[in-house]
Length: 211
Image (cartoon, rainbow, N blue to C red; front, side, top):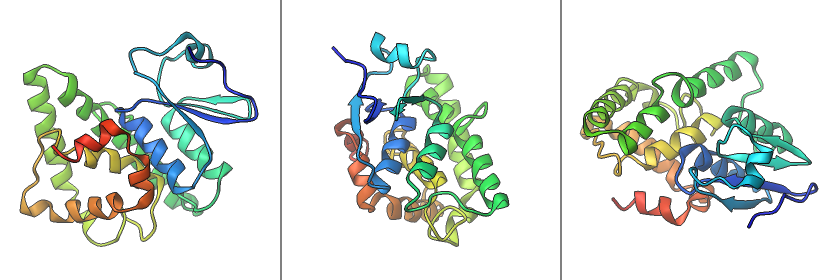
């Protein structure tokens, strides 16, 4: 049975499989944040966590007596609370662009994260349609993966932390971009080789890389 977290501690309630939780774990590892990570099944969130987060979502972050449970809110809070290394640009125009892309990929209607969940959990017809859309979207953006080490950037950002969990799942999603997808695979490999990414993987997520 879980207990309410210590007010002086940082606690992350995290799913072993959900991409949102994976992205936050990647950011925390990249910033070397000391944190207790409590693994919870998304469909079995205990009352102790529901009392903190009535929206019934994961990840849920408890820090300094404050509870946060939206992916963008959590990631921006972590970047400001633990500023090294910085994962969002200082320039307001560049920061707004990153925020918009994160919204587009993770939270907008029909976003990539939504497509992934449909592929894993939807019926055969819906999964096939979602797979086709996601593959097409990735292929369309290949030029944006090709010219800089990270996504439209020379430095890693929160956006990369959100894309990495999705790209890590491509084999499990049965998505193959072929030879034209090399810039995407090269970009993904740069992220996967980072110690912080490897540290962010749960046992369940490690299996995705083998499929």
